[in-house]
Image (cartoon, protein in one colour):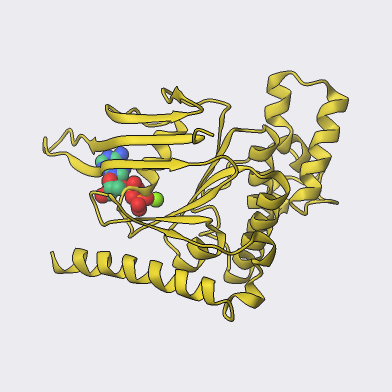
Length: 263
Ligand SMILES: Nc1ncnc2c1ncn2[C@@H]1O[C@H](COP(=O)(O)OP(=O)(O)O)[C@@H](O)[C@H]1O
Ligand SMILES: [Mg+2]
């Protein structure tokens, strides 16, 4: 089966209007994400992770290279790609249920069908009982659950996530990671998850793409062969596959950080 997401020779420079010098953010990225796969992308700060995600989301135009979903070249935002950012992408004036169903409303789905679907996703992300709350009444973790449900509910081909759990406290982050794993099992959604946290990259990824320091290159791919059903934080420190994958990713990222410091 052809890959869901294909990126070939993707290079990106940001122009600097003032100095005339450009920032070289990405260099010849080649990667593929298969259907139902959850890949993590990890790399030092400033290596171009968000640049890649914004290009894939269709928010940032690109000139060099190719990026396509289901064989269709990316040339702007589209409902085939759902995006979750670190900042909660939910509308403050809409309730949880109305946020989650927003995409379906725009598509013109009938009310009954929409409400049934919204209920499934409210349950899936553990927000039952909070359907009628507004974002200001929710904790950071709940807002992020709402953002994830809102994106999933629109049924994108691929979900693109840029450090979605970076701003919540450590305990909530662990819960959200386990929940995303459960969601991956339940929905079999194709997901690209960007993070700078090595533990998170190893816990969530079927494969982890490790990026070099800027300009970001795909430096290595680490396979993490742990069945999703076994991915529970309480068991991970005793899981040899997890520990060896995490240590390998950590080693690869550390090399980059020391390269950046030495330069
Ligand atoms: N709009 C922009 N204009 C110029 N440079 C940018 C812009 N956005 C990001 N950059 C630069 O591009 C590089 C990659 O940024 P980014 O993709 O945000 O990295 P990451 O998400 O991995 O931390 C950084 O050096 C950053 O300063
Ligand atoms: Mg970023």
